[in-house]
Image (cartoon, rainbow, N blue to C red):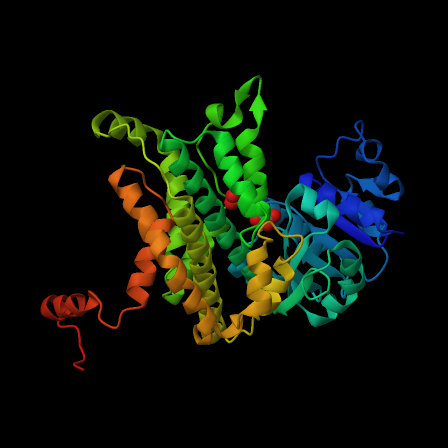
Length: 446
Ligand code: 6PG
């Protein structure tokens, strides 16, 4: 008998299984698409003791009770199919774990279905990518406490050490709250990626800097408190070559997304929270895919080819400023979800679990965890002091970008946000007056 079952053995599932096996956890693997002639076990020696199935009944019978079955398939019809299989074949008190990037509201519905069959449910967000999951992922968990207690021992063997010296998994609350924290993680990830991408673009468009120069700046930052996993991989990618060409000279720039950023934006809309940086990060991806419009506008809109020098000190401050605003926006969303949905997601717990194993692991996550009152960020004087120090750099960078027809997605939104959120008098005075005029909407007079 094995200790754990995994349904869906793609790239992440394989890494998860390899990590578990190397840590002495015997796994059963099921994938309806398993090609038994190219046995996964021959590719990965760690998986020697694991059992591999393309028959669900044999797979289920091979796992010891209470069964713990992790489903790692894309959300949508594949997930629905896998959950139905589990509901049909698992027994009461078995634990069904959804480890995909699942929309928190779907996660909630799935929990209800599973509950009615007397199965226990965990909705878990797994971060780290293929390599991180192999070495020790960051796992954000929601669901039944009993189920959590059953998997705790296993998860502590396969995760990384965090900033507070615990292991990189946490229970955040009921069913959908693990997936919610993972969704927020991904929203932060989108903005972090876009900020780095905007910097690369700003520098290369100046016609003064080459890939090596940009990589040099990134490497310098990597040795400072701006260090992050995403910055490190970006400097490597800047220098990567394929058949003698720089990858960035030949790569197609159309950028996809798996939906998690869109879901977070929708939560922002429902809760009335500004996520303008995430919106801009997603917009860039959407624009990149609008081939037809890009060609038409490119042929018709005048742009000068410019050369400009960038003040790297200003750029450094601007980057630091925007990264902080990204976290502030994410924290305020969590805060609002807690208040509106009666949840109790701890932001410091989230930072702890993101501090190692996750895609957004960084010195900033560690600093926020150690030095800031993140669960009450608006009462933390330090963050306002830092923002005031860094803001002139952002203005300098944006001035230069405007003069040279270069957009810096996420940078301009950070400034717009700070200028508005720090004002007691906003343009919405007139909005209220307009609404009152044409719709007789009620207004209040101060
Ligand atoms: C992680 C990532 C991962 C996500 C990819 C792709 O934490 O390991 O967030 O879960 O699926 O980053 O996301 P997009 O396709 O939306 O860019």
